[in-house]
Length: 405
Image (cartoon, rainbow, N blue to C red; front, side, top):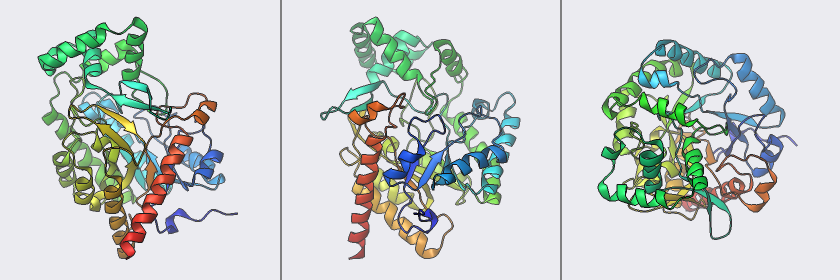
């Protein structure tokens, strides 16, 4: 039986992040989740190097042979030289532009990327047991402070924390065994989704030291300069760029954070006003922000949302959070879905070229059946994400039916 063409699907395109041939969860499994679109990247190509049309087509053909569709390139990573505007960043920008052109010529018209320095995400515990026994992840401010102050010993780190948190972090680290300290180190250093690789301690110290003198204001201008160079190329190539918010959206290890809240999103979209300069709306990343109203953000920026990551968190006023099941956290997922569905319906009716608005279940708990797979990356389980996708599909259907009344 042939799969339907996801481009003709009138609902949100259901997608699945797949880490390529080395992903323990093969495309044969993905086909049975309900997803029709694949979100992937050429992880074997070093960051900053060119994605050739031949390599893109090789991946695209492998996906289509399984009856699926390469929906989104996530991520086309940005070299640190570009973020710092140092060294040979001009060469890396030119290669980035050509990679955009190559993706567009091969029919890949959505690129998810981020502008987070050094780490693509940050957690402090990857083995949190939920009430049902499934495993999820946590971010805890005192644990990160303990890592920063007493393990990494970053110069000047004490200036970034109030004395109460410093004392709390000291008490926290004193209670940890040496093995637990090593686990905390490896957890924070694992910031590259899909690879399973982590920085060494010395590599990490060196990487963050490059940002010691880079303030948020300067880093923001680096992002804007990048957008002014690449968005015109994306327009010409029929490609929609979709920036991912900071994860988590808060100060981190002295590194600049410039895609964390409503003000940040407003400013970067104004830098180059184009459908090709859009957002990856991540309800989990934005939801972890203490002052972020995720439903309001979805409504406010609906017109510029290109790609949708849906996940949920339970958080406190300190900015600590645990990743929850998709319909069970502090994010009003019904409100978010209603805003997305309303916008999607509008785009379809207007015949907009960017009317797919692909959605994927972003992360899922590690369940007992998931333990059959080796080296499942935290958050990227089969059964946990399948549950999330099923819940989100049902929620979308319910929202659509309610809007028809």
